[in-house]
Image 1 (tube, one colour):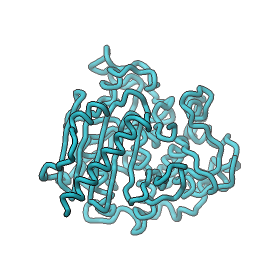
Image 2 (tube, rainbow, N blue to C red):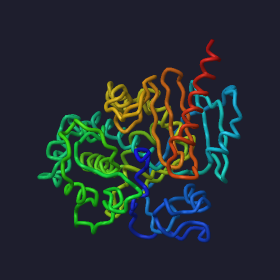
Image 3 (spheres, rainbow, N blue to C red):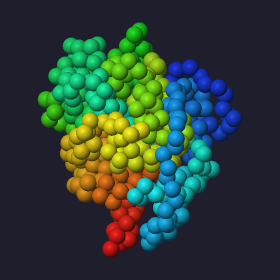
Length: 388
C-alpha cells in the first residue's frame, strides 16, 4: 500500500506564501494533504499553486500544440460515469492511436484547468535524466551519484550509481511509512536547511546502509528528490526550465504546467507537477512516440526500452519497477500518484489512459486501486475487440 504514496504529503515544504487564493474559505491552510477534508482536496488539487505557502515554477508551453483529434467513441462495455463516480475521477481521457476515444470531467474540473499529479511527477523526473544523458550532461547511468552531487560524499551514497537511484535499489535504509511521524518520509523536509545545500541532500547523507547497492528495492520518495537535484546540478537548469525546453514546448503541450518548490528552492521532484489532463495524455503520447519532440529525439535510442521494463521486483506478481515507472509483464507501464492520479501507457495497443482524481483515501490498492486496474484491462479488451 505505502509504495504508491506520493512525495507530497511531504512535509512538502514550500517556502514563501504565494498570492492569496480566491477560495480562502475552501482551500487548506497547511500542507499535509492527509488531513485535508475531501472538499478541501477537491478545491486544492485543481489550484495547488494558490494554496497558502505553496511556491511554484512555471513549465512554459509554446509553439504549435500537439493535436489530439477526436476519434470514434470506444465501446468499453461498462458504465464509465459510474466508474468515474466510484473513483472520484475529476478527469478521464483515453487516447488510442493518437485520437481521443473518451474524455470526461467531473468535480468542478474542466479541460482548461490543471490538476496536481503527486508521484506521477516521478516519471517526469526520470525522463529528464534520459534527456540529460542524451545531451551529455550525464555521462553514464553507471556514474556514481556523488559525481553530480558531491556533498553526498562520505555517505552511504558513495557506492550508489545513477541507475540504482533511478530504480530505487540503492540499499540505503529508508522508511516510507506515512502513518509514522518518525519515518524518513515524514522527517526529511522538516529539518533546518543548510546554506547552499538542498534540504533533501542534507537529510539523505545521514542515512545508513541496509543492503549492498543494487540488491534491494525499497520505495523512497527522498531518492526521487535526489534525482531532481542531480539533474539540476548536471544541467545547470531548474527542472521546470529543462522540462519546458526538452518536452513541454517542442512536443506541443497545450498549457503551461507548474511545479511546486521545496524549502530550499528546488522543485519537489518526487511530486507536485500540476498540468491539464490532455497534457498528461500528451506526455504518455510522447513516450509512445519514442521520446521524439519537435522532430528530434529527446532521449537516447535505448532509453524507453530500459526505462519501462522491470528493473526490480516489488513482490507483486506480474508487476515491477523500472526508471520511476511501474511496469506490467504485458509490456504496459504507468506513472501513479496518490488519490487517483495516473498515466497508463500500452505500446502494443498505442494506448494512453490519463486520470486525475480525489479518491476518498490517499491509497486503496484493494479497492479503488484494483478497480482502476480492472478498468485498464477493460479498455485493453475493448481495443482488442475492435482490432478483430
